Length: 81
Image (cartoon, rainbow, N blue to C red; front, side, top):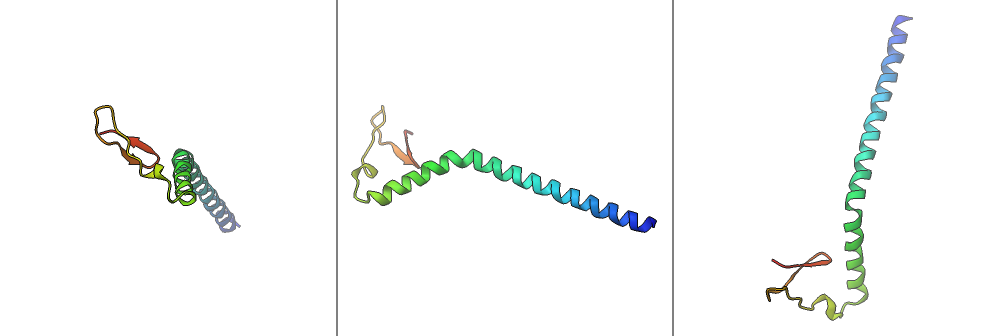
């Protein structure tokens, strides 16, 4: 009977370890989606606008910085160097 109890304890222990690993993976995934979610939504918005308006001059308009240099488009924002 002792060996049967040991086996059931080991099986229970491995189930708990599996559950903890599963929870850890879920927390990491949720954190990653939360952190990158806003940027991902803006990227999809940029793609949608480009598909809906392929000839739109807004995607090719030149923006200038305060010092007169041309701003560079990174994703959905223009940045001055």
